[in-house]
Length: 181
Picture 1 (spheres, rainbow, N blue to C red):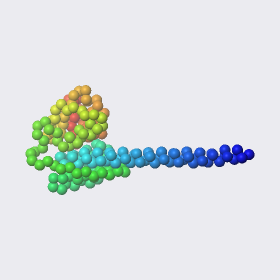
Picture 2 (picture 1 turned 90 degrees about the vertical axis):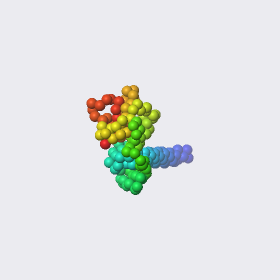
Picture 3 (picture 1 turned 180 degrees about the horizontal axis):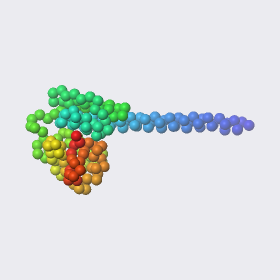
Picture 4 (picture 1 turned 60 degrees about the vertical axis):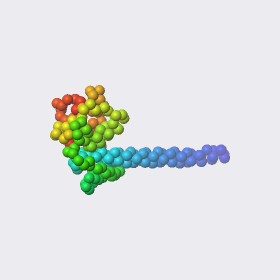
């Protein structure tokens, strides 16, 4: 009789162990999701600050949105641009400084907003993507568009919208991309 009583008392301990393991898995899942949201918010804030420093508030909002975030605050103080973005339940702040002198990038140089978007593209693709030529955008902004090799186009199309990169127009050369407006 004692053997049956011992076996019966193991069942509640087993159930308790399964419930504790399930609780731990749920907790780890939530902590992991929160960490991903914080990292995504930091990435979006950095890119938005660079875009804002180069092109203003609308560019910062567009780049934040392209990264899945929302621009919460935007402030310019002298040469510095401060932004705050939210991504899911996470928030992040970033600051970028405008370069002084000249009227934007020189021929063949990426504008800071395109630089930020291109860094995000490389992150999403998992490797650097070679640029053939840097151009003015369809609206005439220097350093805001680029041309890539035909082999790179399918990889870019897969991540372009998420990174804030758009096709200038439907009939444009297939290798041309620009920062979304």
